[in-house]
Length: 225
Image 1 (cartoon, rainbow, N blue to C red):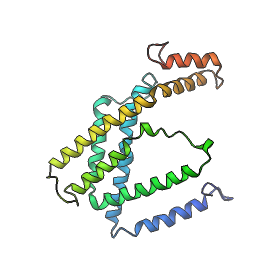
Image 2: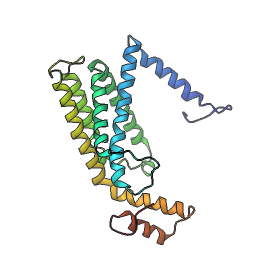
Image 3: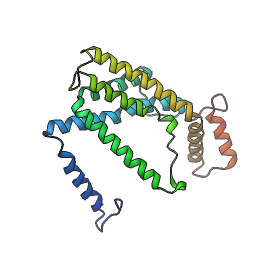
Image 4: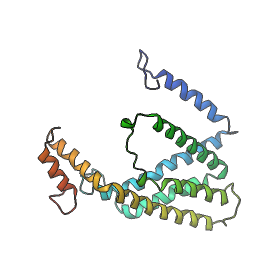
């Protein structure tokens, strides 16, 4: 229903639902500033995934041509992840408790949606590569609750920043390791298969796929383009 368009090409049901949800979301916030804090904190949760993806893709598809390649990514990626965690922490516990509650509700809705889909149409979500997300968000919630910004103030100032940054670096290393150890080999084969298909104009024969698999494995065949 949300994907249906009217005669003018407008997803009217989706627009009305978004407007209604937006009005309801405004209710718990006594000021625009508090809403902006929540949106900023949620945005940096999303930004936290980008450095992890960069580090994983550097290992999964190192030979792909890229118009822009981030220099010193091994240093900047974990620092970027730590910075995103600090911004979330600075939003304060009063904001973050609403954020993490919203994430929990969203995960429950998503889980219900997945459970009601036919078995043949459920995508492989690769939970083994994503196990770190729950302890990451849970740990951030605990640190925010114990911290100086609207929390209980258990963590002294400056010490709390060091703890959050250190926690972020540990999570970053675990996240990259989880993704690399569970799916990089298969992704390399898929990437090489797509590249071979593109080179062949969309038609890929069995021999081409076999060659792509050899290219996808380090030490076998020429590097990918």
